Length: 120
Image (cartoon, rainbow, N blue to C red; front, side):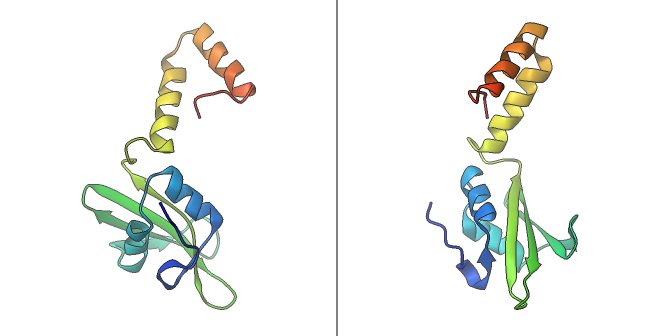
């Protein structure tokens, strides 16, 4: 997936581009949510705005702010439900494996994560 940090007339942070890639989310989908949201609300961090849009069966959320030049900067984005095979699906599965695991399975998962060979 080719992504551009100056796509659609807005600036995309490296973090936002990484999240798009990890979540198998097209940049055009996030841009559509930003440009024509169903709903906008103040973000959790100061001076940010959360843009939300339903696209097909997905709810897309984009977090953006304006920089000192009054240009929009897209900070992060996600989609719910997660795209198949995305990092969010893997994290959810790993969490459920841990949560529902036996004591020894939890110990094993924790040890693997400490050595950087965990599920995510």
